[in-house]
Image (cartoon, rainbow, N blue to C red; front, side, top):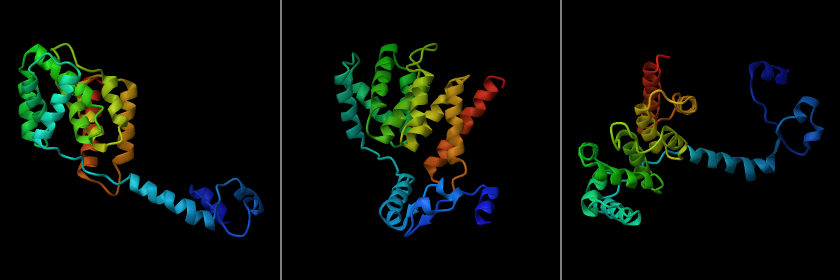
Length: 231
C-alpha cells in the first residue's frame, strides 16, 4: 500500500536494507536502488556532504591594482602586444577592478581608444577568459561582449560567450548572461542554456547576490532577445 501510494504521488523510493540482499525484497522493490546500513555510513552520507559542499557559493577574490597590472603586463608580453604595454596594463587593471566605477571608466576609455589599442585590449581579455581567478574570467567575458573591435566587428562570437554559461563559477556565468544581451537574435542553443540556468536557480531557497545577478541577467537577456526578434 505504501509503495502504491508513493507511486501515485510521484515520490522516489530508495530502500535502506540491513541483513538482507536486494534479491530478498518484494518484486517491485528489487528494481530500485538499494543501500545497506554500512553503505549509508561509508558511501551515501559522504556523497551527500560532497554534494552539499558543491552548492556553497564562494565570493570571487579581488586582487589589488598592482597585482592586476602585473598580470596584464605578463599577458601582454606573452602574446606580443604592439601597443604600449604600460598604458594597456593600466587600462586592463582598471577594467578588472573590484570597483564598478573604475571598471566603467576603463570601458569608456577603451571604447574611445584607437583601433589597435582596442584590438590589443580585447586580445588580452580573450586570453584571460582562461585564468584561474573567477573574477578575472568573468570581467574578461563581459568586456568581450560589450566592447567591439569596430561598429561591425566583435572580438568573439555568441558561441564563445555561451561557453561561459557552463563555467563552474556562478559569477562568470552571470557575466556571460549579461554580455549575451548584446547578441540578438540569440541561437536556440544559447537560449536553451539561459532557460536551463533560470530553471536551476530561480527558485532556490538559499540565494546570494551572485545567484540573484545570474537569474536577473539570464531573464533580462532572454526578454530582450524575444523582444528584439519579435518572438
